[in-house]
Amino acid sequence: MPSFENLKAKIRAGERLSFDEGVFLYKEAPLLDLGELAAEKKAARLPEDVITFVVDSNPNYTNVCDYDCVFCAFYRHADAPDAYTLEHDEVLKKIKWSVERGATTVLLQGGVHPDLPMEYYTGLVTKTRALFPQLTPHFFSAPEIWGMAEVSGLSTREVLARLKAAGQFTLPGGGAEMLSDRVRRKFSRLKGVSAKWLDVHREAHELGFRSTATMMYGHIETPEDVIIHLDSIRSLQDDTGGFTAFVPWSFKPGNTKLEKHIPFYAGANAYLRMVAVSRLYLDNFDHIQASWFSEGKKAGQAALYFGADDFGGTLFEEHVHEATGFVNQVTVEEVVTLIKEAGFRPAQRTTLYEIIRYY
Image (cartoon, rainbow, N blue to C red; front, side, top):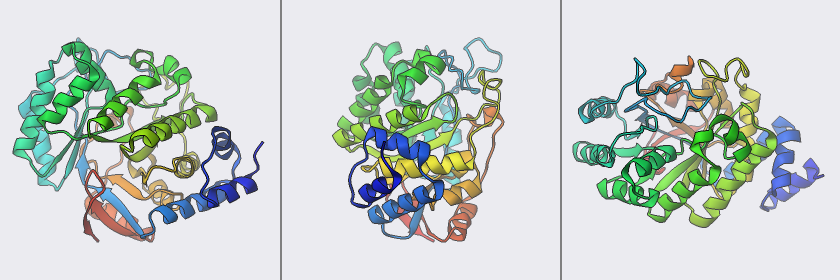
């Protein structure tokens, strides 16, 4: 059994944590000491006292999905009275609305639609690029890529190549949830094993895409499941270097099939522990996001002292968390104020973490 004192020395020496050491930190390390170590690690990797954020929006083009994930309150089957799939013009109106408010990125996602042709997706990318050349189309999670492949008869690599040819070069990290097959069998069985998500991101990186890695915790996972997830994305990052950031958030049970089993979401202490362990274990990731949106603004500020270096996005529009009854909203001015109040210098960035302006 490792000791915390020995692990502190190992971390400060720049040595990589093993799986068992990661589990020990997640389960046993004192929270404030963990935060101090993570802050040191962040400062060593990113010495400037700058916290970045992106001006973005997260609209949806469809809520139709037949994967039946028990943690999701957003999806509808195609025959549901409130199911929808938007035409291109309707999606582009949403994107235009965001661009007019300063968005440089739009994270567009939907359900995994069982019928939409490949041309629907590539057409959206092409039109977005033509109408809004200054915008990054940060579209379509890994499960949506699988769905496109199934409907079109293409491989996932061919799907990604077509999206790239249409003008897309980044991929969001949605659909990972928990990259532990034990967990996935219980709450997202139709999405398949963890390797499917990892393979899409590996292929995307090999084709020149950059992507984010995400995690949704606070449900049926164990500490071992958390470290399995972190270990999987750390290994892929060793191979490809294609991840820009890690983004953890807690499960919101409202209006989901899990609500009666998990009535409360994980609180701020659990979130700060997750952020700190992520910074320490993911030694090959530059950026760890603090999620004001999913955890609350004060928890987001606190995370900046637990290893996070980025405040996420403004998310002018968002409906997946909204479907659970959990809503947070913020303006660009408020993001800047929150970062300054926490004692850091705000900087607006692009999807690829290029600085646009300092405040």
